[in-house]
Length: 334
Image (cartoon, rainbow, N blue to C red):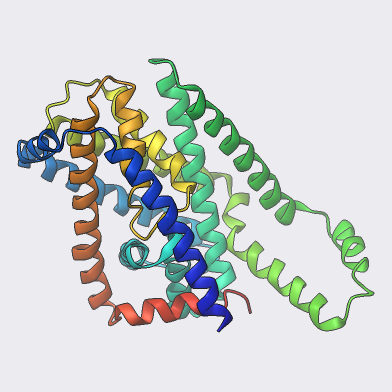
């Protein structure tokens, strides 16, 4: 019963946010111009953009295999399959719970504790946010960053710094200090203390690649390549709509949309994505109606890719959508 209430609350909050942002996106637009911009989009550039997006996910898969390398064996093909299954799950699950589902499914296949797999995914997320912040810094040399975006970037930068500090603290804390800290828990019942020790041990196993400088450098390079590829895909999408914009515009769209992904939304990022795209393109003087047409088309194509490619990966792994929902409810701890 508690699980049902929790899921309904999450879904309700996401739906409210999506509705509010969709109303903001649709406010004062000329729907005839929105539809015209979608109909006139160049199909070839859209296909190239889709290809670039899929190439990004493949680079993410290679990076995840490297991150997980010291904790559990994960082939690049399997990593790609589960990344796409996670995106598919996010279409039907609120608050990006598809990411947790991805971790649980990989933990099952590799016979690894879920917390270890989720730790590798947390490191993925840190690399992603750090790379998006670097893109924001890059584009700031070519344009004036609006104050809300600048404040969001600064907030995320602090969050990344704290997360990295936490990761390295878990990995590099001297054994003598660990013993003193654990001794503080002697008054705790033995079972919770053992649970905490095991949880920390499994988490450390997932982020052990941080201590391998060469491996970490390769992961950073792959992050730069992946997000650079995704920015190019976004530029192709902009060309499809005949927006005469330079490359910093594509990077800026990527930065705004991904920094804004922390905003709660309904499954599929509906509403929030559209409003953020309108804001980003508005900085480059793209009319709101045309910007909404771009947002609707690119969002629809992205969901189609998740359904087709993610569905094919789901079928290849012998899974069904109902199993994804059950996996999300499983405990991610030992």
